Amino acid sequence: YTHSSIVGETAICVCTLPAYLDVDNFKTVNDQRGHHQGDKLLRLVAETLTQHTRTSDLAARIGGDEFALLFPETDKYTAPIIVNKIHEQLSAAVKKHNYPVTFSIGAITIETTPKSIDEIIHMADTLMYEAKTSGKNTVCYNVFSGAQMALTQI
Image 1: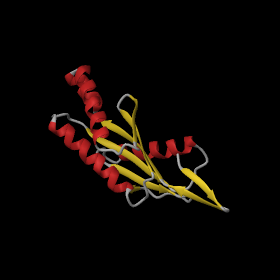
Image 2: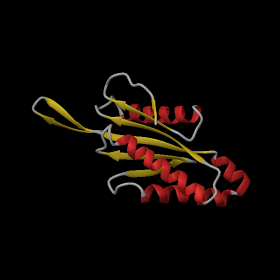
Image 3: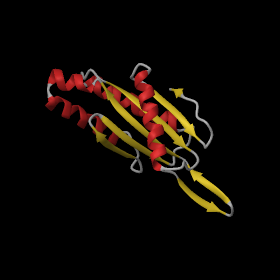
Image 4: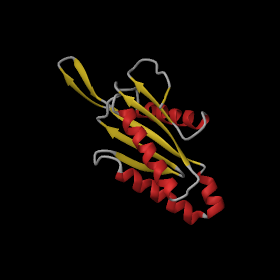
């Protein structure tokens, strides 16, 4: 969500970056190497996220092979750098352990307060699925400022 404070009649928004992350081809690990290896992979993802995020950030597994990330006070200039760093660190970690997976991430900088939390979740989820359908192993990023959004792959 975004934090807003009212100063006079002007709302000031502190930007927030929510992101959805999907482990591409996770089912292959479970099917070919067993659920124990799948569990080890998920722990590796969680550990990598913990190591490469700030204490103010939040990373949570939301089911199966999907994670939700929240980077408060992250503007549209810093957001692509952070999301790319996360993507690179995760890719390096799984490569080191020879896991045949990649990562699709959908991320959106929220500059203005949307109508609801559901709207934010829907936007990040849509961007993550756009990353998956455009070939996986990529990041789709956008900025929500109350106007229409244009998709950006980074």
